[in-house]
Image 1 (cartoon, one colour):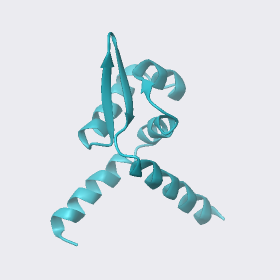
Image 2 (image 1 turned 30 degrees about the horizontal axis):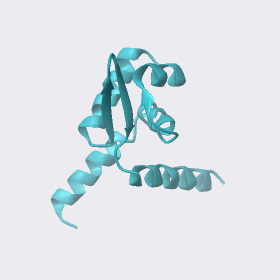
Image 3 (image 1 turned 180 degrees about the vertical axis):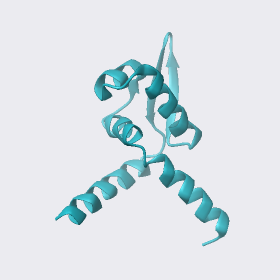
Image 4 (image 1 turned 45 degrees about the horizontal axis):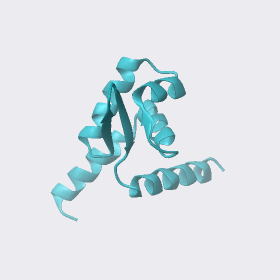
Length: 96
């Protein structure tokens, strides 16, 4: 593995280490959501959700879609869902 590959992977994994970003991604696993829906589902402040969505978007993990006055987000690559599922299974196994 090349050094730049390691840097890119570390950057991707860092984006998944924030609890609110993980909660956002868990909600997006179920399908596309508006920012307002994400705020309501995570019980986080709108400003904080927007910051975290910006981080996820900058890493290419989520993608936005504008519709009139709303912005909807979805997971950009379905393999991210597989990564999240694997992380959950590993976490559960580690606790057992």
